[in-house]
Amino acid sequence: MLVQPIHNNSQSAHVVVLGNEKGGSGKSTTALHIAVALLKAGQRVATIDLDSRQKSFTHYIENRRAWAERAGLKLETPTHYCVERAEGASVEANEAQEFANFSQAIAKIEHTHDVVVIDTPGNDTYLMRLAHSMADTLVTPLNDSFVDFDVLATLDPTNFAVTGESHYAEMVREARRQRRLVDGRLTDWIVVRNRLSQLGSRNKRLVGEGIAELAKRMGFRCVDGFAERVVYREFFPRGLTALDDLDETTLGTRPNMSHVTAREEVIALLNALHLPLTENGKRRAAARAEWYSVMDQPLQVHDVLA
Image (cartoon, rainbow, N blue to C red):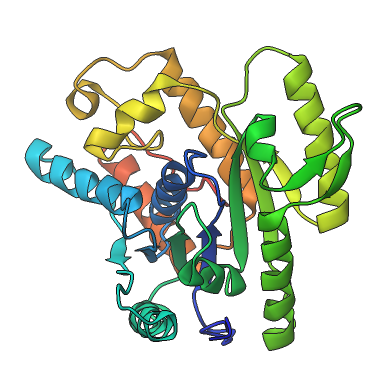
């Protein structure tokens, strides 16, 4: 079955896809931070997990709902779907079933939500390619190492110059081409460098130079993402993000400077993505901000993307 975008209506929700064929790059963590930021900015957000084996994104959201109920907190949560993979004997039948399941989820949310955030599996699957072909914004988290850079490009071992594109980059090129054929629009592709060392190093410099060179060839933007911080791993069991009100009740411990710094780098990343905000969403965020002000409560990050 050919991969074809499911929607091409300009009135449809903006689709943000988190993609990378290598696991452990921070896709699910980045996806939830994007979703929560958009919710705080007044947007109607739906999320879809296409990794029905690991279900990291789904578990993250389930943890968030469970902790909010247990601790009596008001934590913004998106409308969420997890699309199951077909397990039949026929590849063609499986792809048809997966397409139907994905289409069904999209049909329920694309005209009732402002943004759909899709987390994809860390391997090449039919659903992963399908999601890439319908992305308005494609976010590729990448750990800052040559091992992870290998999914994007091949390098000369002598001078570390880029010698060609790797399998994932070639797949994205084709997905973007298909998107242009359908509606003439170009997917905004952003490579996010995660687990950045806070100290300068030869590896950091060489990886950065390789990404910059490849960006010129492939037409993507590169931005700094999340540093290597324990707090991001601590957020997962309670479904928290760096954008939530982090106090002793929420965290179970007193917040420290690492939490504050994490919030700052998340805000910087989200602003760099240039995600769209609807006017209705802006008004909802402004009204909520005014309510917090009147109630003399601490404001959360409502206009992160404004």
